[in-house]
Length: 405
Image 1 (cartoon, rainbow, N blue to C red):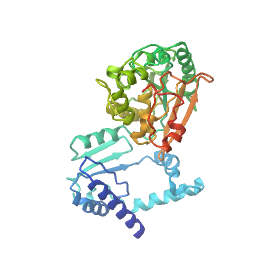
Image 2 (tube, rainbow, N blue to C red):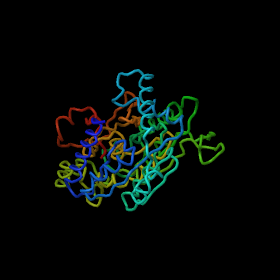
Image 3 (tube, helix red, strand yellow):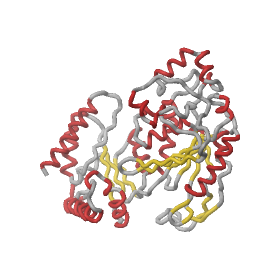
Image 4 (spheres, one colour):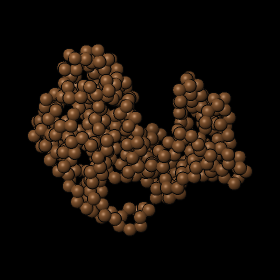
């Protein structure tokens, strides 16, 4: 108990220090087992001097099958159980749960005599039922929206750039060109990949989703994918009967369109450097924040991807996203928990599908090169300043496939 108390105090001290460093709208998350009223009272009193909004979040799981699945798929992957046999680790975690149950006090329980009735808290029951108490404001409302989209089902994301475009061949950025013959060959290979991987489950064919941008080159890349119908019947769904599902029904989002280069749209990087040398240099110095004249920056794209991330987290089915390198860099960085400063330099090759599966600790990644022995060069080599030796030495950031944006 003393060690647990010391760990709690250390976490609270770190949190107070970080939040108090600047008045810039910081949001801190204190991850801990505040399983009794006394523990919650202690945390609130300790943080009182910060004069900040405190929202308690309680997650309750009453479904025994879900608890068992959660133990095996999530808890056994924590650092506490590294190298410990599965059965032994499972018994130990069940004992932990039993110990908490013996003293557990749910938020606003009758035994607390209404102490928490006016506080801000969110109670989640089985990831299906939500009780929201005295929560107001923009960021708290976004938190509610985010939490309501979460679920405990395994979820795979497949990220693919469009096939090589006519503008890629010419070395131009932006535009709305169609696919080159090589790009069309990739589109056919992607259709086969969807049949053999994206829609293939352990018990046969599984439902899957498809998103593209509104631009021609992504829609053409997805044009050979089959959209046949299957029958699905989810357990504990709000629809209590079997339903027809159209496989990989294409949904085009303007949020997924490539970074708009403004006055530089349709130019090569050599032309930009020649006609707009100051702009070219500014972009080299800060690729994340740089905004093209009358165009966009990576930060602008982050803003328009905000709602897409909510939708991505909400769905349970595998999701294939056919988009552009700038967009996929940001989605990749989000799922891989990378600093956003590194996102503009992530390598997203042509002719390749990246499969990402978020886990409790980290995200599993697998890459599928669908057109082997084909050039990954998209014809748009962009000279850039080195950010750091560690970045340039990392294969993830190499310019073997020159970026389109």
